[in-house]
Image (tube, rainbow, N blue to C red; front, top):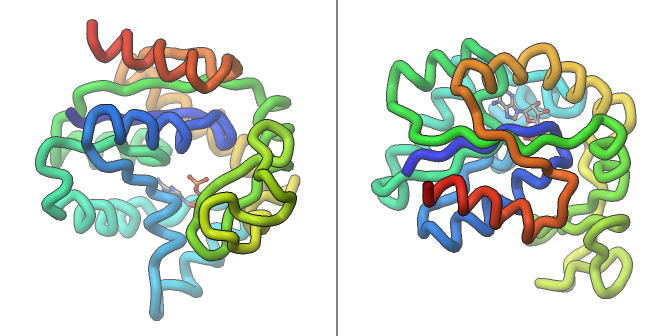
Length: 202
Ligand code: AMP
């Protein structure tokens, strides 16, 4: 199954993608994680987009994803999180594959800002926590590996607002394009997961 999760930053796409990945036994591919993992000469160029909350160029983003899709673990599909972010990316994706399901995880801008301002990630293993909604056992320390928890460079209020503006202007048309199934992302994560599974089983 080729599944896409669409939602503003902080909607819980990453959390749902991880739960779905475990249940459906297909990998979770986050376009943001792919960009953050890039090394070498690409690093500086990518950072100049991410820090401002701007989109990395569509063609280059697709090229990185295509490489990822070729890996063995994608043979039964994947859960895509963070791509497509605009209609152009959606059409580029349609030209290389047929997407099975698109799910929208919807939250208000106020809730997105509230959640993102509390978001922290582990410097060492990348695990995510939220000081407001999903705090670590010890403040500032990763539950999984003991690494240091830090705010993402693009979780400043200015960059968050920029990303939300892009979401409304550029990403929302993707939902109509795919006739996405909408789920209320402000509900408890377990409830959101069960709505998604119900939809997938229908
Ligand atoms: P995310 O982790 O999904 O919040 O993405 C972090 C940043 O990575 C975004 O603000 C963009 O700068 C970049 N990015 C992620 N996905 C895409 C995409 N599909 N197209 C272009 N840029 C992206």
